[in-house]
Image (cartoon, rainbow, N blue to C red; front, side):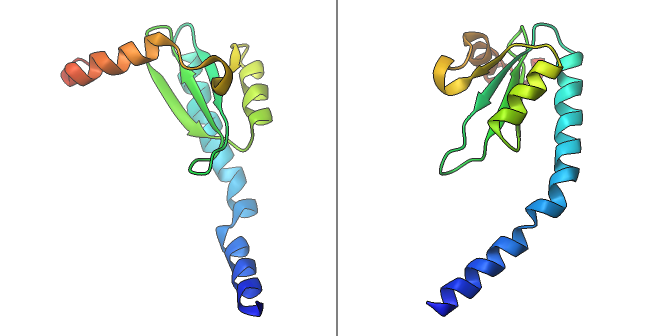
Length: 114
């Protein structure tokens, strides 16, 4: 038992969430802001945390082009979408837009047309 407690404490400390969160947030915020401002009709889809992935924010433009980044929490994602004045949805509730799937299909068939 004592080995497990020592190991668990080391794992928590070694992840460094507190020290890296500011840098990650700045990079994520910068990328998502640039994507949203440089494209038309952008909508935000908040993807919940699962056993495999962290909470993510998916931005989808009017033509289906998209980007996804890990975010600190669903609340942060919704507040971010609101700050950019773009609609925000819970992906687990509404699903993904068809235009995103169409975009992926188009680019899979013709990767040179990106």
